[in-house]
Image (cartoon, rainbow, N blue to C red; front, side, top):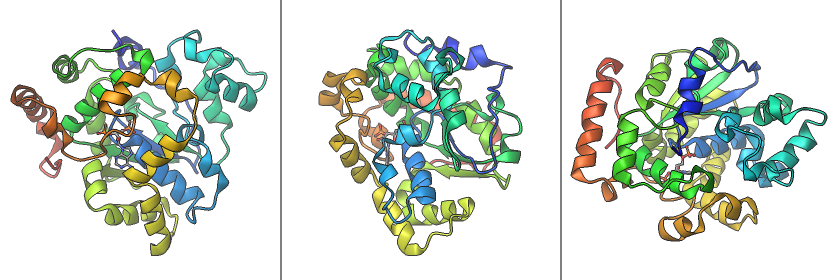
Length: 312
Ligand code: A3P
């Protein structure tokens, strides 16, 4: 099946990724579609571009903020987008001369990325270096699973190499069966939630970031120790809002887009920057799908404690 769950969580059980983190690293950790790219851009911009004058910002986000375990998803060095002509292989050859891509393209790109690094991961704590929080800072973004499943379904149809076309109904079933890539949603979230008091972990809800954007931006500023002024924070907030990020992506002449995206899905349902809303699930989920997710959520969140909540 598309989502190759066998290659990720299950295959990695008990074999955490042996990546060495550094003190200056900030890791953006999420289950897919929880607002990873948004947080990557916020963190990178706060740390590297608070006055919006850094020319590096023109480089697409995924090239500034490496996706630590992307090699797992690529699964093989031979899939079409990874020919020598591909953007990723060119970047690898340039940044890691004399290295072997079979030892991990993104793992090695991450290793040679200059400090201070902002790193993206969808892996949960239990699959990463156990000393991660003793060494680096982590920002965890959680999102209402109903919006996550709608967004992930879209994403799976959008990205060509997933080769996925099933219905939302079927996708919701995979989700509640914990059968999608990156495994069980609630287990992933719970591992972070339990560590939320750790001084090196900052836990953010997508919905809060959306609704009280400046309040959350101030908290992130304090957590990162970036000491941005209120004026700089305002600028970063505007620069990273949905419409600005969407417009920048649409105006970038990135040849990758037609290789990676299904253009018919872009036309019918939107591109990567689809809606960027909290509560869009109400437009997509049937009452049956909603009930299925509610029941699953109720079961899985019993031990998360009463302070855990998502806005609806
Ligand atoms: P939708 O599909 O609901 O629009 P990720 O980066 O983890 O893959 O998450 C992608 C989701 O975050 C998509 O959700 C995308 O539109 C949304 N998103 C991306 N940038 C955003 C921003 N600046 N503000 C709000 N939502 C954003």
